[in-house]
Length: 488
Image (cartoon, rainbow, N blue to C red; front, side, top):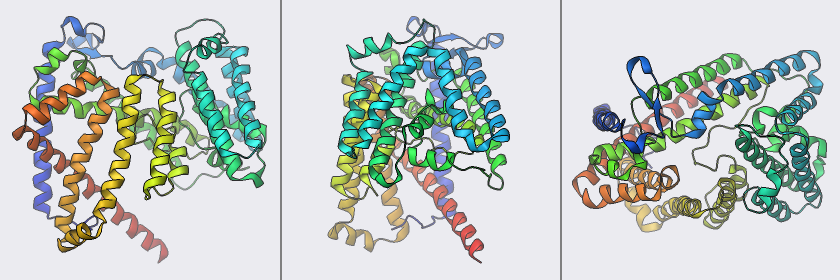
C-alpha cells in the first residue's frame, strides 16, 4: 500500500528543503575538514598536488579511479578506441562474421599485452569449464567455477599462475586478476546456460567468442552468455530509433560524471579522512554522517561511470549490456543471484541465492577477514529485508497497515526504508573504508549522538527516501501513460 500514492506538494517541498539544507550543512563541515587536514602527515600519501594554479590538492586514495582516469587513461582510451574503429570496419565489411572478428581482435590484444602463456592459461580454464558443461550438471559447473576462481586468489596456485604472464609492467597485476577473474565468471555463465538449455548445443567456439570480447575482457561487466550470444548472432543488426542519440547521451553523462568527481576530489577528501581516525573523530556528527553517506554514494557513482564507459562501447557494437549494480561487489555475480533466487520472494531460495552469490563475491574480492565480514553482513541484510517484508504481510500487521490511509502507509514504509538505507551504509563502510571507521560512525551516531543527532540523521534520510519514491512514482506514471498511448 501507499507506493503509488502521491503526497501533498507542501510536504514534498518541506522534504526537499530539509534534505538540501542538511546536505549543505554537512558539506560545509566536510569542506572545512578537508582544508584543515590537507597538510597533515597522515594525508601525504593519498592527497597529492592537483590544480596547482589555484593551490588545490586532490584525493587520490582510490587506485581504481586514478588508474582509469589519470594514470592509464590514455592507454585505456587507445585500446577502446581501437576496438571501436575495428568493430565499425567489421560491421561494414562482413557483419555476419563480426563475432569471430571481435574474438580474434580481443585474443590478439590479450596476446600482445600479457603474452602467449597467459593466453594458453585462460584457454585451459575455458576448456575445463566447457567440458564440465557437456556433462549437464549445474552443481559441477558451479563448483568447478568456484574452484577456478579460488585458484586465482589463493596461494600457491595464484603464484604459479601469475608466472604465466610475460614481462613486467605497471598494469600487470590489475590486468592479470581482471582478465582471469572475469574469464572464470564468463565461463561459469556459459556452463550454467548450457546445462539449463541442453537442446541448444553451444560449442567451444561460442564460449571463446563470448570470453574474448575485448571491452568486457579485463574490466567487465559480465553480460550473461544467453544475452550475449543472442545479440551477437544477429547477422544484420539494426539500431532502434533514437539509439545513437541515447548512446551519445550516455557518453556525455559519463564525461560529465568524471569531471564532477574530479572537481569533487579537489575540495572534499572523503576517501582519505576515514583513514585518519583521530582526525575523523573530531568531525561534528553531521559531517561524519555526510562522510559515511558520501563514501557509499561515490561507490555507486564510480560503478555507474565505469559501467557507462564500457557499456557505451558495447552499445556501439549493437549490444544491450547490463546496467550498473546497486549491490557493491556483486554486480558481476547477479546472474547466480537471479538464477537461484528467481523472483526473490521466497525465503529459502533467497537464502540459497545470497549465500551462493556472496561465496563467489568473496573469492572475487579475495578471501580475508574484512571480506568475510562484509559478505556476511550484506548476505544477512538482503535476507533480513525479505523477512521484514514477509512479516509485514503477516495477518495482524497486514490488518494494521490496511487500517491506515495510503499516504500514511507510504510514510511508515519510508521510515523503515530510511533505517534500511543506513544499515546498507554501515554494512558497506566495512569494505569501503575500515572496520575501525565503521565502529566510529556507529558509536557516534547511535550512542553518543542519541537521541537528538540519531533522530536528525534518520529524519533527513527519511526525507531523501520520500523524494526518491516520488521520483520513481512519477517515472512509473509516465511509462504507463506512454504504454497506454502506444496501445491506442
